Amino acid sequence: MHSLMTAMIVAVATLTGACGTDGQPPADQDSGSQLSEAREMFNAKCARCHGIAGGANGFFSDSLHPRPHNYTSAAWQASVTDDQIREMIVRGGLHMRKSPAMPGFPTLKNRPVLDGLVRLIRGFAKRP
Image (cartoon, rainbow, N blue to C red; front, side, top):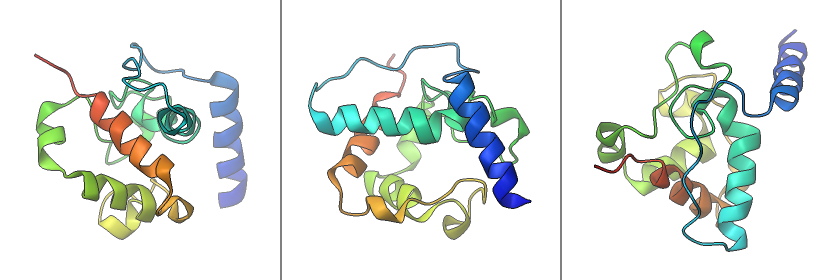
């Protein structure tokens, strides 16, 4: 049943693309492949919950408890280090005492795309 639910979520997310968002992601500061790959990965794996612009307003965010982190929040951005963001991505929510709905991506450990994801997440911060 769990794998069926996962397959359905992936199918809906694929068909809906960036549904549930009201903004655009920040412009790339670097046109390198690292950030480009990170953006593709974020859009495919993270945006369905965190939103395409990081505002915790993805297609599935309303059904999640606790809700995903809002990466545009200055308070959230100040509360975590880059290493903590990396660890959350690699280990997932359950292992970090956060939402068990967030999967871990251990295959990203020590890959350049992980640093790209951190840069992308940091780039969602709202500036005064």
